[in-house]
Amino acid sequence: MANRKPASNARGRILDAALAVSDRMGAAHLTLDAVAAEAGVSKGGVLYHFASKDLLLKGVVEHHMDQQRSNLETAEAMFPSGPGGYLQAFVHAQRQGMEAKLHGPKATQSLIAAAVNAPELMDSPRQQARGHIERLRALGPDFVDALILTFALDGLFFGDTFEMLDLTASERKALIKALETRAAALAARHPG
Image (cartoon, rainbow, N blue to C red; front, side, top):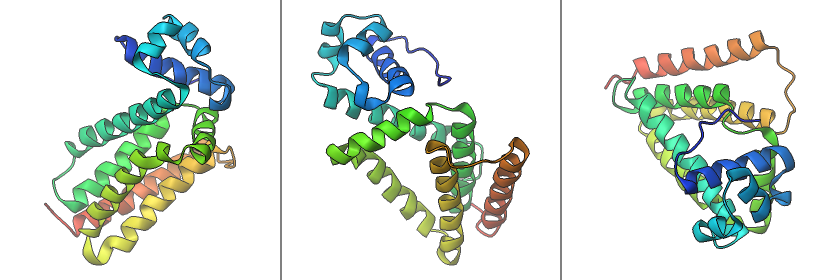
């Protein structure tokens, strides 16, 4: 199960509960009743915030994207401003997200499957990905190298999501360290 902080407000608790239910059973088996029970609210309480299961799933995706944006903003404060610092912050935030295990593989698999029938669930992730690519383009001739780092992180994420990677802890650590080192080298060529 995921390591998430419990949300203090009802809407946040409902979103966290939906992720917990998805972690255990998958989004296909997510019901408003199960989420209500997990969140400790009535079904009417869930419906007050999310009028349908589809809107709840959209809320879960938005909640996750908000967490990613917040993690990236926090990481950006740790590195120099500019495209090189952004790349380092992105790699750092992705590493932090993977280490925190904000949600389990089953939840991500389920949300991807749900997006097949509701493609609009991917609107926010698509928009965020477009913004990320635009920021990487500012690296000019190093754009492709920055993309390679991004795609390596994506591969690690999706390999974990679909439980296809059989990496030892030391291999995973070495891979992430190599990505961070390459991001730092690219950033050094693009100071502030």
